[in-house]
Length: 113
Length: 115
Image (cartoon, rainbow over all chains, first blue to last red; front, side, top):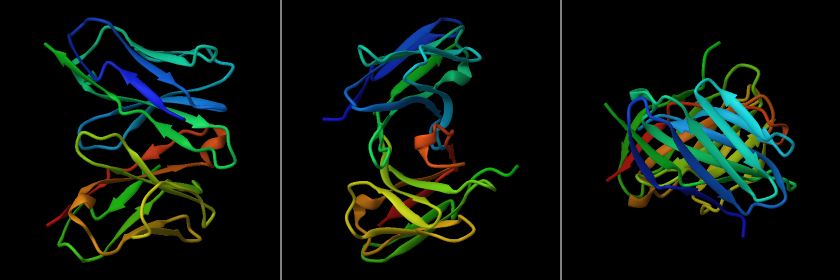
């Protein structure tokens, strides 16, 4: 079954600290993997998109990694800020005739001052 | 460049009614996707339109339908509303279909409440 599982479900850290969010998927065949940030009540905003051949991609303080062999991805946030409080969603595109997007349930991150 | 716009932003309807939501993609974008998000739930994919053709469809009942016009603007219609249809409906546009690894840009959403 094509699934995307994210952990932890929620995370609370202090401002200035680093954190890593995990994404495991069983989607096959694989096309690409995306990380989105969604503030409460707003639409998601794309952080990174990685294809099969990419292992790491950065966007400012956000760094995503991809291990296509183990079907795992992580999103590392460095020097967290209060504005990083949001849900972070992992999405995997299935390489089929319709290029179906499989969405994870997200990790809710809370940054405390 | 203007972002994705959705109208209306908020809507209150009663059970049994129907509703039409509108989405204007970023200029030049040909792909429009619709999603439903209920409180505490992840995004549920409704459908994707590309050049006026529905290319992908999620697992939603036939009460949910959509269309795309020649200018890439898209509408989503929900008939015979149920209480469970209360949700944030999000529209996303991209230059081409997601198979080409183009970034999706989301609109602010339409908050639908069914009483």
